[in-house]
Amino acid sequence: MPLSPEELYLQLGNLVADMRDLAHAPITPEMNRWLGRACALIDPFADIDIVEYAMHAPSEVSVQVLADAKKHKDTLKPAVEKWALQFQGKRPPLEVRLAPVNTLHDRLIIVDGVVWDLGQSFNQLAKSAPTSFERSDGDTAREKWSGT
Image (cartoon, rainbow, N blue to C red; front, side):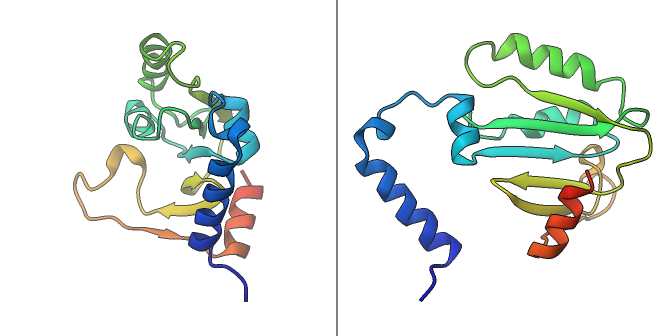
């Protein structure tokens, strides 16, 4: 019988805990990427708010932001610079990339390969209207992720 994702996660956690060399190794950004621990925040209109949300990721997890080259807000760059000063050596750098103009539409959160769709941009989340987010099924997630 196949394991559910939650059961698999627990079993892998037990396996890593039993492997002394991994259990006590310092966690580096490279190790997190190898283990698949990463978070991507995708929003054409990214600004300072997306950086605020990125701070909620565990400190050892790499966070990437993808925004539209034209539509991102001017507050994004100073917020990323502030991140670099504040967390220098304490957590992985915040990686920001700008996609070609008008190639992004969806707002997504991708955590360890699982894709979540956001109903609004990060800078508008529940400010003037309720919003939702939902997990994408495997095919939709692959299509959205490969399109970014």
